[in-house]
Length: 144
Image (tube, rainbow, N blue to C red; front, side):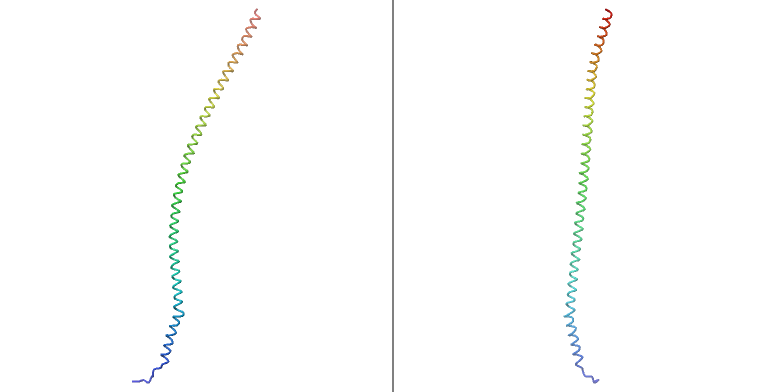
């Protein structure tokens, strides 16, 4: 049964040319383009991994900085408390010393006033004796 169709070689040639065209396009355009895309994807992947690593490292450093800051705050508070206690102690010493000096000054002043009073009493007594002697002499001088 022959239908009278003779195989046409042009169809086979066209098929071969089409396959050659697809092979060349694949070789010239698709593979280099695919290679560039894969390289870019690899670069992006590496950059993402590097960014993730850097974020983790930054988080670690941030945590360390917070720890250091907390330790420093605690130490500063301790130093401030100690300084306040020391200042209170020094203040108490200064107040005590000032009170003691004031009491000593008052005692010295009182003693000085007593001495002055005693001296004035002696002067007054001596003046009273002189006046009394003068009065007695005048009275005796008039009586005689």
